[in-house]
Every structure is written in C-alpha cells, then in structure tokens.
Image (cartoon, rainbow, N blue to C red; front, side, top):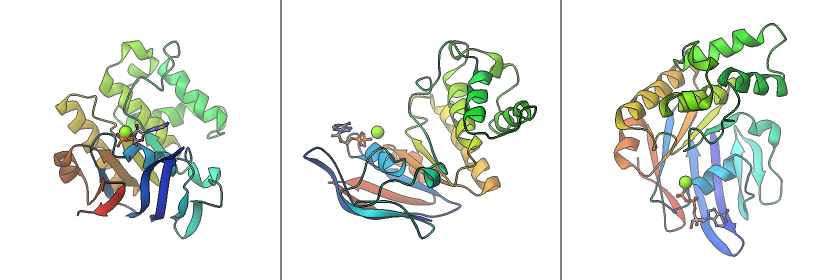
Length: 223
Ligand SMILES: Nc1ncnc2c1ncn2[C@@H]1O[C@H](COP(=O)(O)OP(=O)(O)O)[C@@H](O)[C@H]1O
Ligand SMILES: [Mg+2]
C-alpha cells in the first residue's frame, strides 16, 4: 500500500494541496478525480519524485518514499511508473518503436544480450501490440497504439503502482474503453495497483474500486 500522509504541495508561493491524505491500496484501481487545475498531476509529480512536499510524507509498504525532510528514494520510485496524457510526447519521431524499448532495457540492464528481443515481445504482447507495429516509427501508429506502447514501457519496470494521468482522455471512447479494460486485465493478472487520474466521474465509477476527489486544495474519499 502507498499512503500519502498530511501532504502539502506548492509551486513557489502558490499552495496547490494543503495537508491532504489518501491511500492507494495494493491490487486495486484507485481513482483520483477532480476538475482541470485541481492539482491531480501535481499529486502524480509527488509520487514520481518531481516535486518535494512541504509537509507530510509518502510511505510505500511502511517504508519512506519521500517526506518534507527526506528526498525522494529514486530506487523505490522505479516501482512507480506513469503513463501520461499525450501518447506521442514521449516517443522520438525518428526512432522505431522497438528501438525505444531496447534503449530502456539496455539503460536499466533489464535483460542480457540475446534476451532483449524476448522481453520486448513479452511486454508488447501483454498490451496487444503486434510484431508489425513495433517496427514502425511513431508517425505510423495510432493514438491507441501509442498509448499501448507507453503502457508496455511502464510494464518493463514491473511496477507496484501504475499511474494513468488522463492517459486515455485523448483517445476516442471505444479506444479508451479498450485500453482501460486492458489495464484492468493486466492488473488482475499481475497484481499491481493502479492510480487512475481523471476528470471524468463516469469513467472513475466504471473502472475503479476506490475513488478520491481532489477539490479546494484537499483530497477526500468518495468511494
Ligand atoms: N510547473 C508549475 N509551476 C507553477 N504552477 C503550476 C505548475 N504546474 C501546475 N501548476 C498550477 O497548479 C495547479 C494544479 O495543476 P495540475 O496539478 O496540473 O492540475 P490538474 O492535473 O488537476 O489539471 C494549476 O493551477 C496549475 O496552473
Ligand atoms: Mg493534469
């Protein structure tokens, strides 16, 4: 379980979150629901180590991830992976999809030479990407496929927590449903937990076990 305890977050003098707490349970989908500008991505930045809290702490299975007085534990942080809103943004337009995977695998020493292709096949099959698609350039794949690529890259890290920050909001309704159903199946199979960040209350009802709403600088449990 990941627990966010008494957290305050701000950009310079602009307080965005004030003494808020929430829990992200293992093996479940937790939604973080709120209007645009409410501070949802700011919470994601806390969890991925991009923003240091002014008060409070974040615990991961009763170990400290970050606090106002202790910096983010990068090593633990690798088990928190995020898929962002814009599917193409993280892709290098001149790099074939498969080479993007290879780069991550090599940088993080995720597989021995000779086993790299196998690992790519494993994660891309898990998200339903065909062998043809992974030989394409980003400009040759659809938005839904690009989002599956991001998802597969996150899965390479065998994360404990997968954060989807409005990850499907750029997709059409049926592609969005496909990707979210896929995430649900992966979650059931591998037991990871998911933080589903969205402004869409219907979507959070459909896909999550717990719902928190972020409003007026604070976070409260809704379901
Ligand atoms: N890097 C930044 N510097 C200053 N203010 C920011 C920065 N990022 C976001 N904000 C402000 O913080 C508030 C919350 O933003 P954000 O967390 O992105 O909202 P959400 O993801 O819910 O739409 C907004 O008012 C936004 O303008
Ligand atoms: Mg946002």
